[in-house]
Image (cartoon, rainbow, N blue to C red):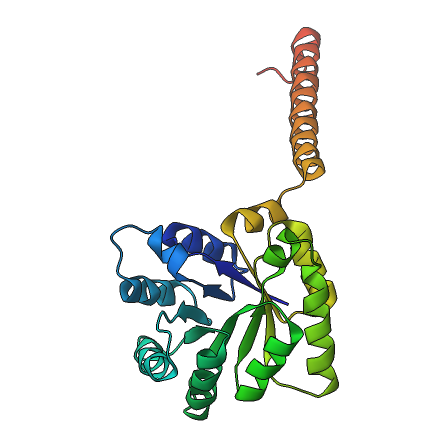
Length: 236
């Protein structure tokens, strides 16, 4: 399973890229709005310089014709750009038209298996089921991921399942177990995946033991030198 970062913050993306685990980035209007004074196109191109992988940039239009025009413009920003389109009737029409033109689509705001199946049938490259938001209303978001993966695998549907709205490291593990091709996660979740208190304790203990060994070795060498001076051996 590949890991994408769900952010538009360039410092977070740079750090994740430096860790060597980042395969792509997903953005949306909410994330871009947090980056005050940064034009959307400029930020996406900046991300593309750091990450050699798919970068999802979302359309804001609401009719099929407008979505198609906007998606064409966004796709032209960079070869790695994938256009995000929310699933609804107009979105589905646009996905079908754009996919025939070879434009890659990440269908977002997926909350049902039927929505995912329709988007895949229309030619979407990715479908993004939102796990956390389903959990918020008392449904099992990860069950949706499992169901979509099962159906896509059974019928050899090439559309990839991109698990989104993941809130904590356990979500990432469960997405992998469910068979998701990709998990897109916030920066904070990525850092949490790396951390474990027993690892921190172990590192501290190793360093402490090593320093103690060096101290004992130095003390032993000093005592040997003192004995040599007393006996007169080794003097010039």
